Amino acid sequence: MDQFTGIKHMKRSAAEIVREYGPFPGVEAVHGVTYDGTHVWFASGDKLNAVDPASGKLTRSIDVAAHAGTAFDGRHLFQIAEDRIQKIDAATGKVVNTIPAPGGGGDSGLAWAEGSLWVGQYRERKIHQIDPETGAVLRTIESKRFVTGVTWVDGELWHGTWEGDDSDIRRIDPESGKVLEQLDLPAGTMVSGLESDGGDRFYCGGGDRGNVRAVRRPRRG
View 1 (cartoon, one colour):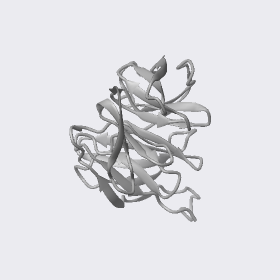
View 2: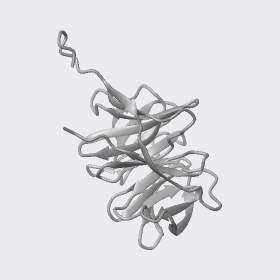
View 3: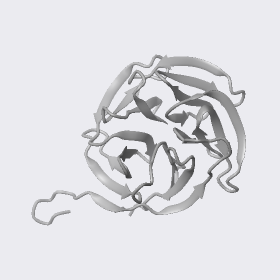
């Protein structure tokens, strides 16, 4: 905080990559990423794939259109496919409901928090809170950069960015969209999907590298 103005400055630091997973057989790109408390799930175009974060091995795949963000509400996986969001029973892999995506095909990240879905709109630089039953937009948060993955953890809203060769993970004020903290990835290292494990790690999709990275979440206090 500036001692003269009382304004809090954004915290900025290099992202600490703690582990890389993949590349995986037959996976050309990683889109959405989520975490179910045991496995990291990632979208790869025509499949949702589960990875054991301890061994790094693929343990399960669900055949479903999987073009962008992925989320988990404790029982169901949610997956963006073109201009819609599919609700998938995680136990059976069956699609049980479909709602329209707010960006009509320009959607990116997806997260579950506070009983709502939060959807990134990539080029529009927006995050929408939507009703998970109907797809109705409840509110919209403006960001300053292209939005990729989205995640909530401990009341903090984070999202990934990807423009050109630059990517970062940033914490923003959920009301104003102001950037509060930024973790810069090395040049040429992309963030497609993003999810927190609820602890000290973010899982990030590596875009067309076809991998997933674990990045350390900054400690509080």
